[in-house]
Length: 559
Image (cartoon, rainbow, N blue to C red; front, side, top):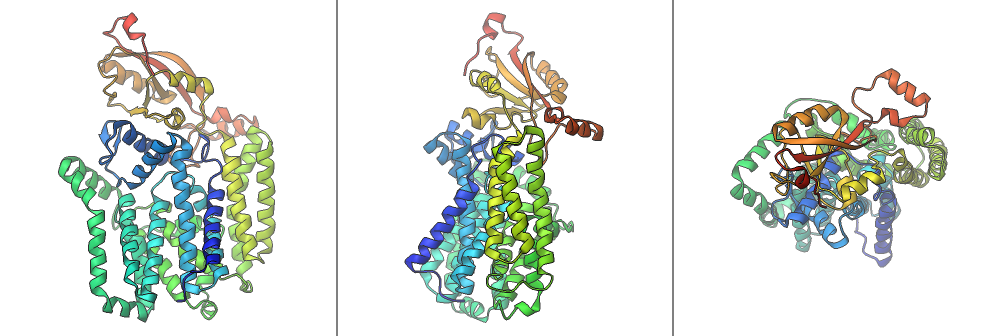
């Protein structure tokens, strides 16, 4: 290990990398039709709204229930942004952008600590920035990139402490790990712990430092517990039944000891377009002399992936694996491309280019060729040209970063997923709203700047509407209307159709769209007719009121 960046110029370069990442991730975050997932619009955006509206910051809430499935720190940060800047997509997703940029910065810092090479360190950050998964995930208010960013930054301070031994480096480690724990729980220890295990397995100096300073390490761990655990103790004390049920449900959902190769596929997808090239470099023994830390980086990469072979996982759980992969890829700087290197680069080019190209093609085909599509096509052509040549690592990273910024920030929103017609927004602005088992319109709460209630077949209403004679609006997808009417009738409610519209919807992830039950013939017919609406589910809007109320009383409505 070598000296960490300390000069004014180094600080400015790192600040520039952070701002560049913010600039790359920010386009499109204010668009309701931008990239999103159900976890974001159903949980991430609405939970901090509930905190702001109900004023209970200790126990986040959602639809009348305590929201204990995940720790509260990210929701607190989003709620603070709502309070400061107003409730909007920009104020919520700016938190995500900042964490994405922090993840890029932490990667560069780790690379600097390992190599002492300013240019390779900055390239490592740029490589991470240019991975499609980071460009997508940093646009959404989700838990995974913030957790990875905090664990990576904590590991940077651990590397520094191993080298210089200053006890002043231990408090930041404590704070960062506790913050990560308060965003997503024990997973932060898995992410940073993988780096620690790899370091202890490859560095005699790290093992010696641990032996000599074990009291300080123990004190640091106690400080971590003192910061991380009080919230969990509080909610268990105040809501023992709810917290126990939530913990049991979370553990059952993990499917422990069920072996799967999904993490390997997840790593390859997350690292595009760099994954194949980075893994090729990692396994080539002739690169060990060029990359003294290769053994450590490879072991770190393996340990970050290994636990998830036995735990049900989503690809985004592996974000921390991208740090060693990016640092390995950054060693291409000023190095000749190894044998088969171009083939590995071309494989990444084909897969990443296909994803971005399909988005550009779909928008042009269904929505027409506008400025965004032209810019997307130019960025795609530049990416293909640079990666086909595969001769300059900086140009490869820059072209990939530009491609994802344009495609996800400018092109993808024009596809119109989760679009809400202006007249529907105005109708909802003047009425109480309940979303039934959708929850479409997904981004309406953020557009309106207020919490909207979500219910299902069990039919629960917010206290302000329960047994009230106020009328209110109910949004439901067409396929759920029979169930909605049945549930409403059982609770003494009637529903009158008011409006309807069609929109594509992001369901489980940003690539899942279209109505349920689409046949192959229907899809081919819609494509041939350039008719994207034919693939879209129909959303119906009803005015609901209690039957025991007189028509004059039930007709009233409020905001």
